Length: 280
Image (cartoon, rainbow, N blue to C red; front, top):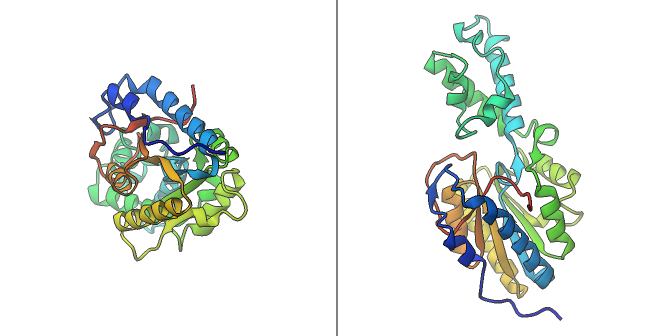
């Protein structure tokens, strides 16, 4: 028989190391805390089984989508420089962009800084290429082929599921344009089983991202509560979204993945800072 769900959480350890920060600074004390917190989530999943639930964002939280972003950039540059009737002077500077340089950015979502790094000077041209690349990135074209799970994510998610815990995914990916390939990717990587599609929340194009994240996490909170369970951990890479999740799931321990974000801002002081999902 499963024990009752306690009111105590892992937050005492998190608060003790002072994790209040602004993206993307990583306190030295965060390194030992993250594996301990992740292992604590596994212990809770083992203890409470199907009454335990966890909620994960996808892009740049659970899924490293930077390779997809890079391919989108290559396509946008090809359209602007190879297929255009007149070659722009900045095309020579963008001829040999590298994926490794994307990982060296303070914020991997900063396409403009990435393109300027190679010497592109025309701001209008750079902005046009970045905008086109972002449209391709959001099209779902390279999800299956180029996306990859963060280090340790596959093992962590599989172990949660092995204990019977419910794993929800909430992403602002377009359900219309990216839905099919997202489900295929998660299934191909063994973190979404047959019959679990209802555990994946993707955003309708007509809904703003913050509104969607608020609605989805509220619905998950209700679903879990109706089963007599509890959400123990929430995982996000956007400070604004993490705050929304914390409002709807106040008893869950928040985890913040550093490295890529649309909007910079302060991260909740009690959040555990992650760089990946390695357990040691």
